[in-house]
Image (cartoon, rainbow, N blue to C red; front, side, top):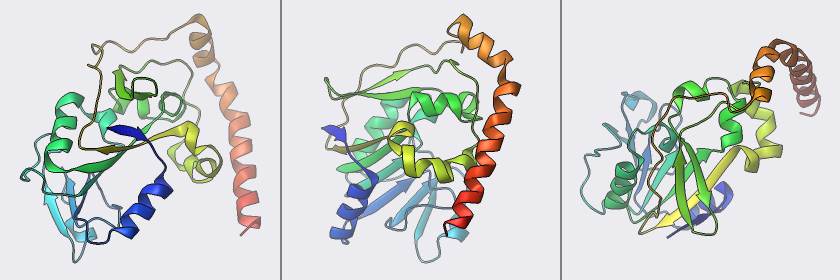
Length: 216
């Protein structure tokens, strides 16, 4: 079973169940403090004193079946070449968990995403299943990752898909990976105009930064 959720709801559930054994996959340097075990391809153990850090592959996790009560996978699924296998691994090692992925909109407008992400991961609310398709370049990259600091508080639902699963993660087979293409004449025109678009966005970004400093 999988359904939409919110980050706040998941955080509250973890606070209500402090005895849960929690795994954070792809934790990097700033993993969830609620986790007991952290897994990443790179050794970030120095950032988790007093916690258990494992260096390993999320698609072949070195854990036994049902090792965890809850598993966190934030911004991992869109990077995985074989998402079906990864989902099976999640279900194998844990009985429930939280998945967070960027929306297709975020994948288009944030710089760097099209090169790093293999999939648009979406949720079919009618079928209650995850869907995967290769990302397309529809509009030019307009925002930096750092812009998320002030935009996320207003537009988080537009930028991320938040999902809670239990026992199983239903999904449709991924569409075949293909070359990323511009989807329309308008897309190609926008790409050529990217420099003109970036300047007013730069001005807006600076104004927002000043407003945020004044509001502290």
